[in-house]
Image (cartoon, rainbow, N blue to C red; front, side, top):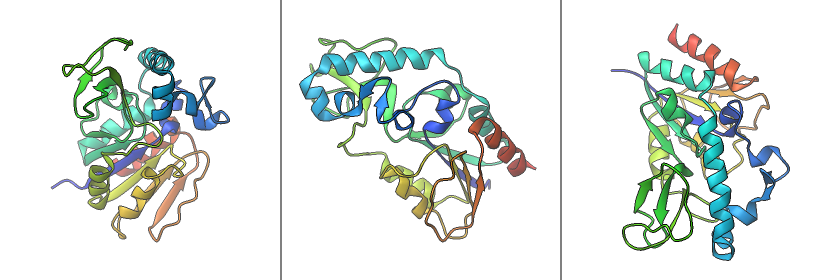
Length: 227
């Protein structure tokens, strides 16, 4: 039976493919205040602006490619069962070829009905006002906004609780509830953290830090784990 590696990825892995993150730009995301485009209140106030913002992010995501870190994680499946939990809303892990992925914060390539959060559809292009789901509800981005619950956190916590090894890549570990996932790892399971800016991790676990970017640090770590 293969050992299980659980991987928690954040914006740092996508940044190295060319996608920007609001946390690295003074609270702005591509020039927008987060409160203008990533909260339920923003949607109620100006849904057209919110839709335009995510249409732009979706177009941007289509132009970038998985990087060496995404590709290296796929190689781990040669020897391990690999479960990826990502805070990112892009599909770079899927496009790289990873098989088991949970998106904590939703996906740019999906939309859902405003009247039924479980009615989710895949997208090829943009969402506009007047685009309706099967139930007649306006389609909105399938993104977990600030102030909304994170339904996938339960499954993510279950995965981490069964990890033989936990990898943490490109995340500051300050955004909850995702930051609390580390606490679910079995106490005897080693944790590897890859990030050029060493995050503060208050934990009883054995933690190894690789203070470098994802595209260089992750392939090195994968080589080590496959050796």
